[in-house]
Image (cartoon, rainbow, N blue to C red; front, top):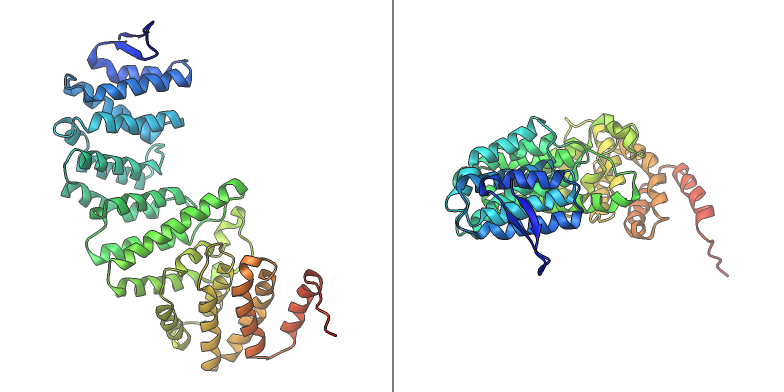
Length: 406
């Protein structure tokens, strides 16, 4: 292996080395005790050398393999970011020879499948980003993304989403980034698209908000991005997929076990938490379609009252989602339809169980408008008992200044 030298007349680092050992030099550099700035400068210098035509194929292949390992297993931001730089700077010039032999459909399948099987200590969120970068290299070199590569993604992407751990929003969000940039990778068969949509809904139904306040906003942003991607999938397909997804969403929120601790969103009780994050999906569902599904649910004798009770309780929780829209319309439709079809005992239970919680939302300005509409419907449209008024008055008595009328 050669040595790195610094010219007296330049701040650039140059290398006297045997070309075949470039991958060894890269690995040794990261393990060395050199300052991060020097490591970054040397890596940038190696990236610049990627355009030289004199590199043997074995050298190029070695650098590409090091780059992929750094992306998938890197232990520092320098290592991971350098992996992406190396893959691009050495991949594009070799896109007509070495890169296609390295970035094969088999590699794509292995990346997705190995993560699906939970093998190794891969940085899960970087798997779709590595695949995306490979597609970018092919595109920048003037090559279209090959059919075999897209087939591999189509085959395994839904399983990858399902295998993500609870709350691993970043990985699923990155899957969305891959499929948005390269729509050829979206499954072409409606059944496969539906399978992917259901996998995303199931993922969003799991996981709690992080306890670390610094991570909450990022978690919410990633969840909203995933919901936006799901909406794009629906827009590109027939309405039947959206209707099926909406039915599946009702199935997810009507699970009896989720009603046990509807107010507890802590990670310690994540097995019993409500499907809170599904609220991000609501704004992407047409209100007219949601109303039709609500009417169907209320009039379907095969759906138990406990399931409807759980579903409405979940939707009440959704009012707290920061970017929530149209959730009050869903609740108003449920309450109206229950009254219209004389399911009064169920309406009474739902009102008594949820009125106090809706009233508490009035404390927060961003929740006040939607919550007030729902609370008004609960209290004024079907006045079955003064008990619910008494519960609400207890909250108003010390949280709001009285208005004196003279």
